[in-house]
Amino acid sequence: MRTFDVVVTGGGPAGLMAAGTAASAGRNVLLAEKMEKPARKLRITGKGRCNLTNARDTARFLEKIRTNREFARAALRAFSNRDAMDFFERIGLPLSVERGDRVFPASGKAWDVAEALVRWVRKSGAEIRCDTRVREIGTLHGRIASVILEYPNGRTQTVRTSNLIIATGGLSYPATGSTGDGYDLAHALGHRIEGIRPALVPLETESEYVRALKGLHLRNVNVTLLIDGHPVGSEFGEMEFYEYGLSGPVILRLSREAVDALIEERKTEVSIDLKPALSMEKLTARIERERPGLPAKATVADLLRKLLPQPLIRPVSRQAGIAPDCPLSRFGYRETERLIRTLKDFRLPVTDYRPFTEAIVTAGGVDVSEIDPETLESKKIGGLYFAGEVLDLDADTGGYNLQLALSTGRLAGLLKKSPGAPDFPEPSSAR
Ligand SMILES: Cc1cc2nc3c(=O)[nH]c(=O)nc-3n(C[C@H](O)[C@H](O)[C@H](O)COP(=O)(O)OP(=O)(O)OC[C@H]3O[C@@H](n4cnc5c(N)ncnc54)[C@H](O)[C@@H]3O)c2cc1C
Image 1 (cartoon, rainbow, N blue to C red):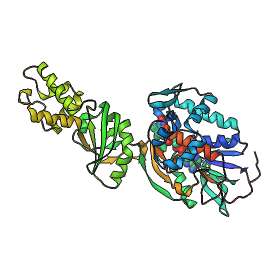
Image 2 (cartoon, protein in one colour):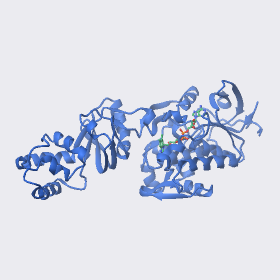
Image 3 (cartoon, rainbow, N blue to C red):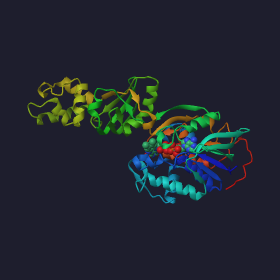
Image 4 (cartoon, rainbow, N blue to C red):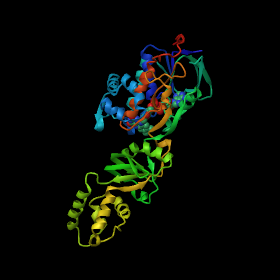
């Protein structure tokens, strides 16, 4: 029977980083990846450009972690965003820093990030075995003892190991291989799984306006998420309208709270400030300035054309309770006020969220209270480690999720022993 010092389950960024780290320290490593090639998801990240980390300082970086921020601290200390940037430059991947401190490969190709990582892992001496699924994990006296691998033809193989790193990712974009196997493996070993749900996910709305707005891309808007009528978060930036509803960076960032509210069946809405740079007073002044320049027979729609993209004219005037073809001559103080209120608070109900197939990340996962944050070793099973999205960790868009995968991958790959963990002899290595 083949024996490895460590088996890494999953060849995404977390698993690759873990495997390369362990192999660089002289460990005999098997990385099992169930798809035909490693890092399929990584290759499509950042719209094919891969926003691999964010260059902002640690305090501001930590703010962007949505779940279990404190737990993530030790991993970020072990391998910070700065360390990640140095690492990629060192393995031959030049980087560029863009707006919002987002870091991309200078080539603009996510594929290059994946290939650089895979090359580094192979050079470190780890064996990467594709089309290889970790199906079952064997334990002995509360420690990892063996792993059952499964190949596409149904054949299985048992390998011996005293360390296993689960880096199987979440459930989002399952076609990339992230189908939630890690949750089942962890659960079978007695770990609790916190509620799994899509995060950074588009939202659905059943508003009468949606069809008219389909395809519209708004920049520089401020969107507030309202739950039971109370504002719970605001984001400034870009959003897009689709057949089913809303997406774009601002919506994705607000989706975390929206999904939770929808699960709890609470009233969920978005309020879009279409003119965030202008106060009510300034908007009133702007309208008063535009009016004299319009022809005598001008309508509300003519006025709105000066302020909004065409597809929004009808929805905004309808929500304000004003007919778009109402002549401006009959457009008084009250109507102006109603119009301005709608421009600052265009409301859409949120009726659902899109499925995992469209979610950038998975919220929930392996309960971190059962894992030592300093080592990422399980508190239940000796030699069992976790890294990446399979953990109950998630962050905003902007390179934070990949950094979390890399940081936790690095820390897990160090195979540090947690104090008090049962210490059994390592199996003898066989390369
Ligand atoms: C479209 C899209 C764009 C994104 N863009 C960005 C971005 O620009 N910046 C950013 O920070 N984040 C981005 N993310 C999020 C980021 O990709 C993930 O957070 C990250 O890939 C998680 O890494 P991971 O290694 O934990 O898991 P994954 O990348 O999901 O990798 C897990 C691997 O495990 C394998 N596996 C699963 N089960 C088994 C098993 N039983 N046996 C063997 N192998 C198994 C899978 O095949 C997969 O290869 C994006 C996500 C998506 C979907």
